[in-house]
Amino acid sequence: MTAQTAPEARPAGRRRRRNRPNYLAGLGSLVWLFLVGLPLYVMLAATLQSRADYTANGPLAFPKHFTFHNYSADFSNGFGRYFLNTVLVTAAVVAIVLLLVPPLSYAIVRSRGKLTTGVFRLFLLGLAIPAQAVIVPMFYVISKAGLYDNLIGVILPTAAFSLPVCALILTGVMRDITPDLYEAMAVDGAAPWRVFFQLVVPLSKGGLSTIVVFSALQAWNGFLFPLVLTQSESTKVITLGLYNFQTEHAVDIPGLLAAVVLSMLPILIVYLFARRALVQGLMGVGGK
Image 1: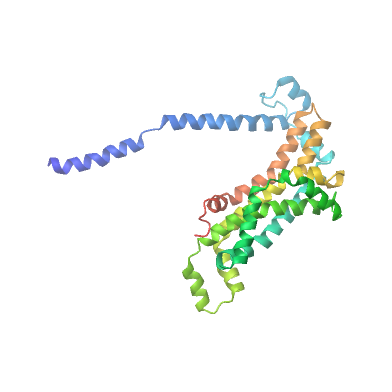
Image 2: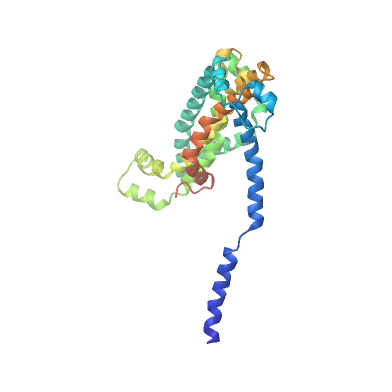
């Protein structure tokens, strides 16, 4: 009897220990929520009240009279043009990455030649070169090419510095595709381009989503290249536009924070739709 009840008691005890509340983890979660939520609350609350109310009540006060004047004023001050320029730069960078990285990663995974390996190592070398180290020669090249103060002059270097990380991520994802699938396609007589489009691309959706989000973030949040390679108001992007709002409205904090919220929304929406594929791609399991 004792020998039968002892094994039953142990699992019950383990279940009780498993169901015991973890107060330390809960406390840590509350601290993290406070540290993250307080700045977001201050930012959103400031954008929904007038400059006079914000100055009188302080940053922690809840808005008494809601207003969307700060958002409309931002577009009146040129934010719409900055937003459109940033969308164009981001879309072009993502298009270049999607056009170049998948075929390159596929060639690296499937080819064992020295040329392909050398190209991949050259791409990985780009991970060790910061943009700040090459900004002066980059400015010289862009100027000589006649692309200074042109959005194309921002798009090309931004895409170039996104390629190494994107190639590394997508190559790791494509390596997860089992060789049996390639052999099955080869037995069916499939050409390399058919293997690429019908097998590799569908099984690499997680990695593709990852490089799309990564390259979009690089382009959307880029500051150095737009700062050095553009000059006129017609070619400024959001990051430079926020800088201008800070100098022009040094005391108008609600207007500045409204511009920050508007600049965050597109990338936040992209992340919400692609977050699962992004996590899988960064973990290297997007191809499974």
